[in-house]
Length: 125
Figure 1 (cartoon, one colour):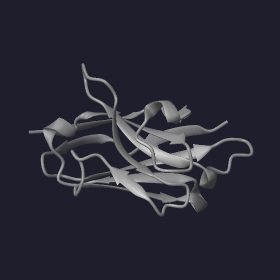
Figure 2 (tube, one colour):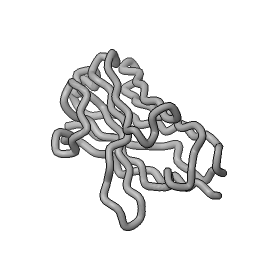
Figure 3 (tube, rainbow, N blue to C red):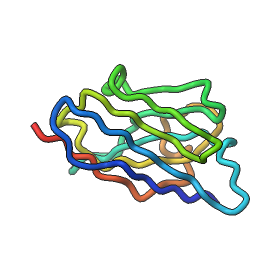
Figure 4 (cartoon, one colour):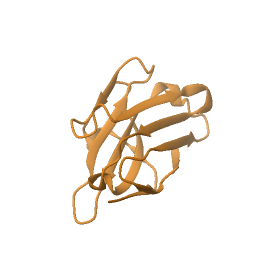
């Protein structure tokens, strides 16, 4: 079973940058076999897809709302996935979750079967 723990959230001004990290652990877990994703949930809104990366890192997908500003990457040797967030906007304020799922890139929440507890990102105007 995969356990995921996010870090790197915080308070930043509009236009600033943050780098989120997520480390995976678990007995017998080979994180390199999983696709990984980032989702976010703003107050009063449903959780939404942000970015995903395939098991080997060769394929990525980013939501239109973050394309060109956010970049997902992974280091399977460290069991980590990252989300580099640049040019942050107030509308990026949300709790960000990492998730482990199928080996291919997916935007579907129901295809991800392990979730972290989330890390808060707040962008001030």
